[in-house]
Amino acid sequence: MAYLCLASGRGTRLNMAPIQGANVCSFKDPGMKYRKKPVVIDAVQWLGELGPIHDLGAGYTLVDGALSIETLEGKLRCNRGDWVIKGIVGELYTCRDAIFRATYEAVEA
Image 1 (cartoon, one colour):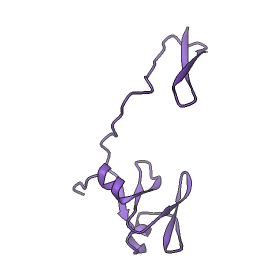
Image 2 (tube, helix red, strand yellow):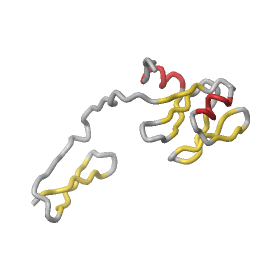
Image 3 (tube, one colour):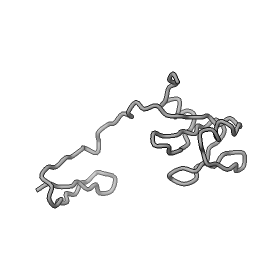
């Protein structure tokens, strides 16, 4: 019989639950390290101009000098200097400049 590993709390203790009809068990250690796959995304830095944000297809409103971007998680605040990123399936999210620069690099279009 195969088992499904169910994390309890923050993954420090694992419970095993049987899976009906399964014949293999695949277990990934919750402490493993992962690297982002090398995918190319579209991104625009918010510097006060709405044109590039609009061209990205972002649903947004202006709130107190910042953008409120419609994302899969709901509305997220995007301050000047932050980035609006369009993910691989068209989803939008925001990213602080320092994190963006540490995570992404420019590629040829």
